[in-house]
Image 1 (cartoon, rainbow, N blue to C red):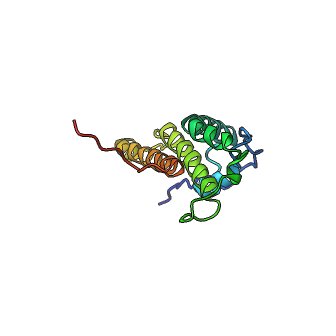
Image 2: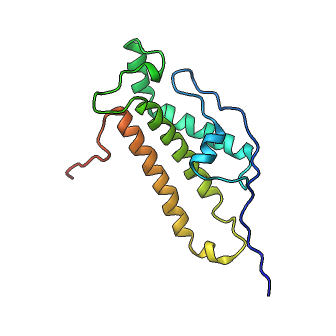
Image 3: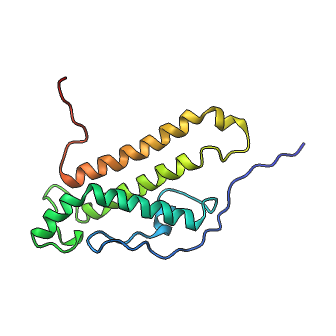
Length: 156
C-alpha cells in the first residue's frame, strides 16, 4: 500500500521588500514567510499582493495616529518615543504583526479550497475561524499602537 502525502514545497523565491510610505517600515516577504511559516505553496506574487493590500489597510487604519506623530515632529515610527512600560521597537513590531496578520487572514481565506480531499472542505468553518483569529491579532496590534483597549463595550 502506498499513499501520497503533500507537504508543500520548501522552495521559496526571495522577493524584493514591499516599499512602504516612509513613516512605516518596508515589509520583507521572506520575514513574513518565516514568521507565519508559509512555504512555497503560496507564490511570491501572491505573497507580495497580500502584503501590499494589508499595508494599505493597516496604513489607512493608522492614518490619524501617523499624522499626529508627524505633526509632533517624528518623521518615522522609529523616532516616536515609546511609553516607559513598553520595550524599544514595540511600535515597529506591532505594525509588522498587524500587516502580517491581515495578509495571512487574506491568504487563509483564498486557500480554503486548496486541499484535494473533501476533509478540509467539510471543515471550512475552521479556516474561517483561523482567518478571524488573524484579523483579531491585527486589530489588537493596531489598538496597542493607538493606545486603545482591545474592545469597546457600550450599553444598548
